[in-house]
Amino acid sequence: MRACRGKRRKPARCGGWNCEPDGLSGPSMNFFWNHFFEGAKERRNAFICVCTIMVFIAGGIAGCQLIDAYDLLQYLPLCLAGAGLLLTALIWCGFRQMRARRLDRYKSSPLSRDELTKARSKLRKQAIIKKS
Image 1 (spheres, helix red, strand yellow):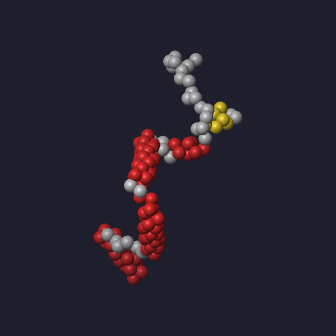
Image 2 (tube, rainbow, N blue to C red):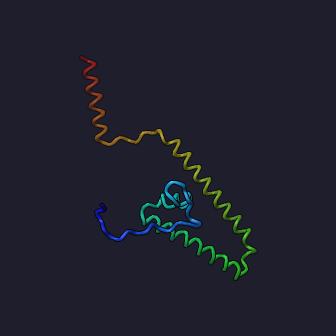
Image 3 (tube, helix red, strand yellow):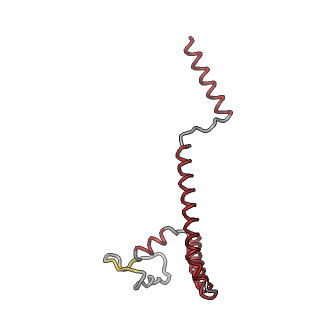
């Protein structure tokens, strides 16, 4: 006997572009949407992601309308070349930073005052033990 005697909810209808039937448990969400929402377990992350997608789509539509209204298509090759140079420069800087980090990885950081006093006292104790 069930503890809760409330009205049972029907499972969400699944059928169409976002679900795939699996033989065991009935229809389930397809791989893309399952993976998409797996990373966004918290509602905040999902909200930010969906809002970002909407802003990109709206920006693309507005950009297309501006290009068409002001006949900016003639400047497109120049803009693409500039964007390519900027992307190349950013990638180059990224590689330089990664190389600099890799070279500095094994350098030890300077010891704090407390660490220095502990190391000195340890060395003094070892020197006294060796003398006797």
